[in-house]
Every structure is written in C-alpha cells, then in structure tokens.
Length: 164
Image 1 (cartoon, one colour):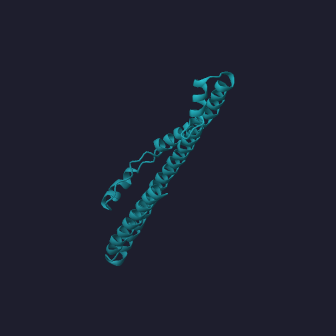
Image 2 (spheres, one colour):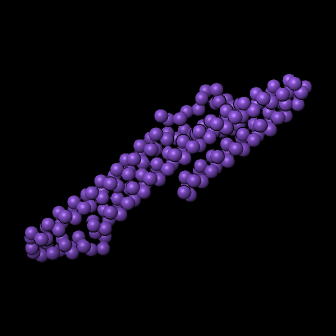
Image 3 (cartoon, one colour):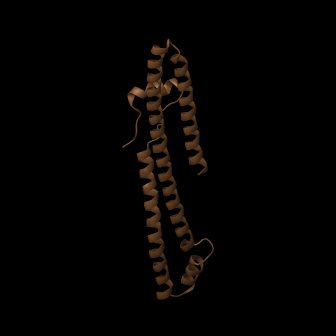
C-alpha cells in the first residue's frame, strides 16, 4: 500500500515549500525482492553449472576438453563470477529494501509533522483570540519550525540513501 499524503495536508506542505515524495515504496520493495531472488537463483545455478562442468572433463577427454577445463578454472571463470554476481544481486536487493523503508519512514514523518503542525496552528489561533492577536506570531514560528523539521528529514533520508 503506497503511502499518500492526506488531501487535507497538501496545502500546508505546499505552503511550506515542499512536495510529498513521489517514490513508490511498494515498487521499490518489490524490485528489492526481485534482486534478492535473482541472487538466490544465481547461487543455485552456480552450484549446478559447476557440477555439470566437472562432469564434462570427468566423462570425456581430449584437447578441447582440457582447454575447456583450463578456461573453466581460469582467472575470470564462471565458478568465480557467478557467486560474485549472486552476492551483488543479493546486496542490491537488500539496498533497495532499505531504500523502501527509508521512503516509508520519510513519508510517515512528514505526515506526522504536518498533523502536529496543524494541531499547533489551531492551538495558536485559539490562543490568539484569547490574547488579542498575539498568537498570529506563533503561527509563523510554528510553520517555520515545521519547514525546518521536514527539510531536515528530507536531507537525512537522502543522506541515508546516498551514503548508506
């Protein structure tokens, strides 16, 4: 379920100078899962291919078979590259899952911050009526604090995604 900004909070977020993140955390998580599955499949194929290759030189002989065995056991060989690819795919999957969780956290934080800001503004407006208008200055301060908090959250999320 992709998290969306409640309609009632869109105007305030826009007024603060931000747009709600459009990243689809569900699709990012699905992509992460697909990469993780690929890593597992590559690991399984690496074992199967290794057994098949060994069967070639144990059941056959000749120059071509010796050349194949030499290539197979060489520097950039499938027994080495397939597990490395499996590890890379699994790591990519994990990284994408982490990104999805960061997006979820950011979206939830923004919604919570906006809800708290709406509540604080309502309280300041109510206080303004009782204090003869002094609460108006509080509304400006409340909005500025929310703007700084949301800006910090966005920067933190980007830092976590880009720098790990």
